[in-house]
Length: 392
Image (tube, rainbow, N blue to C red; front, side, top):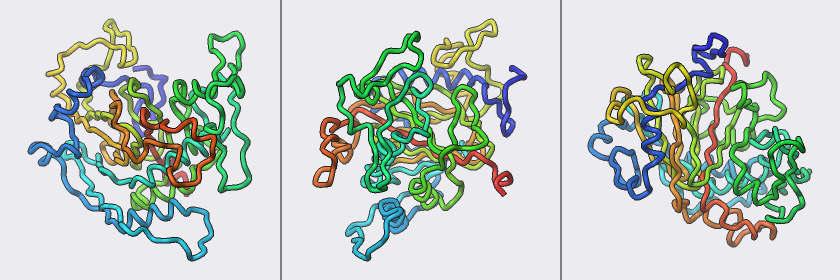
């Protein structure tokens, strides 16, 4: 281990993952969609749990319909002055049964927690308002001059890249260094192919795997209120990492260990289904490597063990769908995890037309982007960065 690597809460921020989860990651990265449906090792709440999974998943509590409806209403009307004409929902959303895995204390699963209207609104806020904020870093910020939409003083009128034409040369995303290998992009190339991540609130630095001591922008207040209401203020959202996937995209094995606070994080899925894998820490397991001590990222490392040897390290695979939330808290907060696969064609019908709201007020420019989320999966991971003692 490199002694120069940063350690936070006793965790090496540059550590390599154990070999067994790398093997499991590769297995599910290669699996086809039809095989996913028939793989009974995968926890899939829509398909139903196996008898073994029923013994492993403990019902810890239920979030009542009234609380979910109240949180959704507050999210929808955040910052608005009530005129007394707000109509309550005629049908309450279903209650959410919360499960915790026996093998992973603190790993809690919230199937279908976020109702469809809140999913739509979350996409609106993230991909219109937050992506357009020049204070928020995305994966192109370091290499491109990004033509952010003009920021409006009208809070009801959100700026958006989706008001731009798709294939025209202007506005252009121009490389900062004209001598680099990067090519000028149009808006379609930016939104459809190149955009991978966005940071909210405290701006996570992907290169140093650290947070700056001061943030140029606060975590969005409406999203923070939604999260703290649903999770009983068990943590304070201070940073959000938004990941945008297409069906062939993936997130390699990693740990979220750069935060000073040990409090839990919550990850929301929107759009297409994905496979989430998580492994219990086992210090006796060897790291992913090429041999001879040369370590490489896990997506490129060869297998040293067979897939059957992965049983030496407790792991679980979960199919996450739009509206599902995974919470990592307690001993599982620092666990190795990954997203090896996104399932094509699984976006719920309620989001098929996004960003065009059928029967609602939608800027005419959005029409050209209708159906954007049908082939996308968005994940927002909300976490508290700073320890409570440091905040007092």
